[in-house]
Picture 1 (cartoon, rainbow, N blue to C red):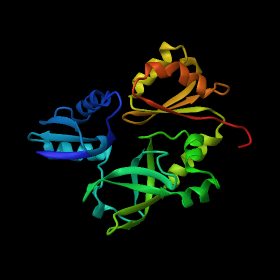
Picture 2 (picture 1 turned 45 degrees about the vertical axis):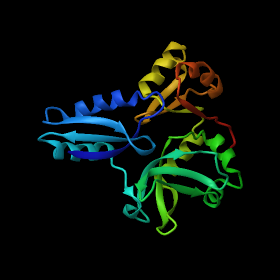
Picture 3 (picture 1 turned 135 degrees about the vertical axis):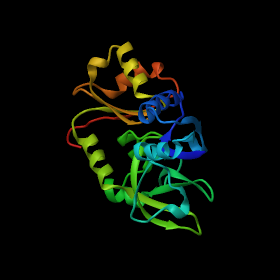
Length: 246
């Protein structure tokens, strides 16, 4: 049996399992393989494969979804990794990112406060979280700056690509919503049910259960959240409000 922990999480309303199952059926096609999906440490998804084509299937899945680093020793300084924000606002000395380190014990990577200040100015972490609309489980891409194996500490910075996206989100003149904990199809349905589909410029799937909604100019994020929130039980919603001259 082949087992892979992929770079996707299922949590919130757990609709992601059904969506992932559909995606695997499309990806693996007629291969001789069966699979089982389960949530492992901190909601990362494990795919267990069995059958004649399990090895080929495992390689296809790694290529499509990526695989978590799993062990601290696997991390390389200077390399870029995908992860999810976790426990946002619980500490004042930075922001934590879960990049999928399970052994020798589960460990999150820290984006330190001094680095955030160097990018954005002398603001408290919680103010930055609110300004950027960050919510737990929002996908983020980071570069490993240092790993202290003895203390099991991981320090990271945003990748250049993520910084470009972040700047674009802040400066393009549109309010935005980051929604985690439900699949994009449920977000679309909530917008249609509330009549707010017309207020959306575009919708981007950031991950299996993470969605970016870009609103049309003049549409205010707080009003949309109030309307669609009751239709998205278990989801978290963060808002980016555009302010001219910021």
